[in-house]
Length: 138
Image (cartoon, rainbow, N blue to C red; front, side, top):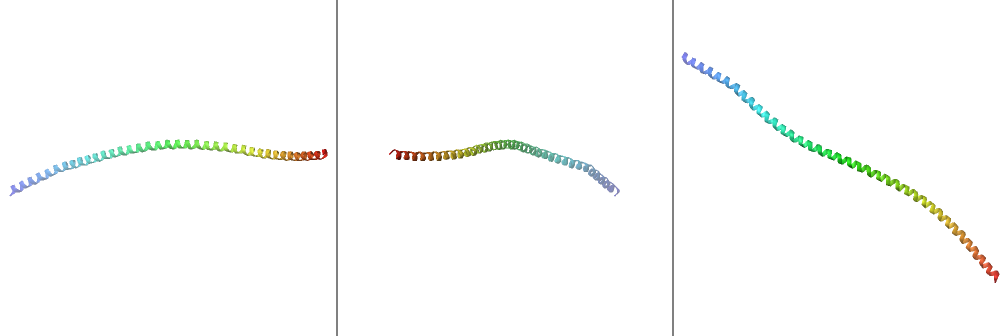
């Protein structure tokens, strides 16, 4: 019986020793698996980051293009505003000249009417004198 129990003890020790020696290997395998999984995750994240970097670069390019377009529009607006201002000033000068010309024409018209009235009065007097002379001559 002591032999059997001694054999059993040896087998039991041997199994425990085998279990102890497998456990570190299992831990190493688990660690390797975790490292590989993390490596794959890191790779996926790097790829995603690269894609997002490309998107950001494209968007940045578009924004820069839009900024350039906005600047060009602002320059065009400034040019058009100046043109409108210049044309408004020219119209104001033309209006002033036309107003002055209208005043002068009204003065000329009044002067001509006055002159016509004087001429008509003289004509009437001359006509009357002509009639008077004809009467005297008859």
